[in-house]
Structure formats: structure tokens, C-alpha cells
Image (cartoon, rainbow, N blue to C red; front, side, top):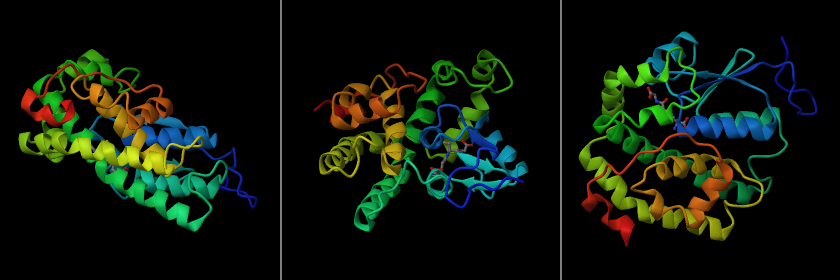
Length: 259
Ligand SMILES: N[C@@H](CCC(=O)N[C@@H](CS)C(=O)NCC(=O)O)C(=O)O
């Protein structure tokens, strides 16, 4: 069996990497961007939400969420865990700064981004529960073992369960939208301080950018993001993110985003 890293810390090209994702999952995109940045070739396995939990268990991962990475039989799950493992097996280009103070700052933003992930997740399941038609766009390019049209047509139970598992209630989604302006201000501040937004993306950049991109897939939300530094960062780092949701949220929930 090939080992994941040689003595010099170079990725061993004989290692097989398989990344388990859910199409349009933002932390899955984080893992893909990190693998691409490291130049590590990988096979992508697209999973259907909810059913994914059984597939990941059968594949002997410890948890039930994507991204999940199998590196020659070693199982690494979670976008933050994957970031650290990739830096270990392929140190260049680094995802974390060498300086301990700078690294701590990046880790703090990355951890914040891991929590922030839940907001776009709650929004998308809330929206798809109301109208599944946009699902086709989010599934663009996915290989689910069935046609996209069929996945959309039969997707009601998956969407309902995902909305329930993720707490996509009216109250939570209204609160998520209300707190979004402050979140975006915070991200812009980190960019102006140089913790994120540098020429070479770090783990926090790659954690946050797909979440922002998913938020930008909502017609209701995009105008409040696209021209600000957070939006520009997301567009620069995530050039291809599928899906678009036409206006769906009640106007009064969006008041904070319009000022
Ligand atoms: N915060 C973790 C968790 C990721 C997570 O919750 N992923 C979602 C997709 S975005 C998932 O696997 N959900 C299970 C499902 O939809 O059934 C990470 O960054 O890896």
C-alpha cells in the first residue's frame, strides 16, 4: 500500500483519494478546492442527501456528513480535519501560516466559518421545501446514478427530511437573514485586516468562500453581497458553483439586507 506522504512531506502520487460529497454542498466545495490547490488528484463520489448518511456508514467513516475523504483506506471527515491532513501529507502550498500568531487568527476565522456554514444550509433547504424546481440547477453536473429530472421529481421526502434535520424553520431562517449583514461586515473586516483575502488562499478563505457563494445563489441575497469584499472574495475563489434560487423569502425578512 502506498503511504500518504514520503519523508520529504511530498504527496505520494500512488495514493488514491476518494472524496465523498453532496452536490452543491459548500463544505464539500471547500474540500475540493483544497485538494485542487494541493494538486492532489481525486475521485469524486456524489451522494444524495440523507441517503448519504447510510453510504458513509457503509464506507466506515466515523460520522455521517460530507466532505469525507478516503486516502488509501484512511478516513478523514470534516472540512477542517481534511485541511489539516492535506497540509500534513502535502505541505505546499500551505493552508495555514507558519507563524503561530497568524495561524491562530486563521484557525479562529475557519472555526467561525464552520458555524456560519449552517446559515446557507438552513436557507437552501427552507427554499427547496417551498419550490423544488431550482434543485435542478444545484444538481448540474452531479452524478447521482439517476437523471437530474427524476431526482427533482422524487426529491420531496429528501428535502423535507433535510429541512427538518437542519432546523430550517421560519423562525431560524428569518433570524439567519437578519444576522447576515453583521456576518458580512465581520468577514469584510477580516479581509481588511489581512487574515483572509490574501493572494494565496488559506484554510479560512476556503472555508468561508463556498458558504458565501451558496448565499449568492439566492436572488434575494446576492445584491447585498456581490459588490462587497466578501462577495468579491467568494467570486474569485469559487468560480464555478451551481444553482440559483429565484426570489423566495418574505420581503420583511430581507429588510436588513436592503439597507
Ligand atoms: N461542518 C462540517 C459538517 C458538514 C455538513 O454538515 N455537511 C452536510 C452537507 S453541506 C451533510 O453532510 N449533511 C448530511 C445530509 O444532508 O444528509 C464540515 O465542514 O465538514
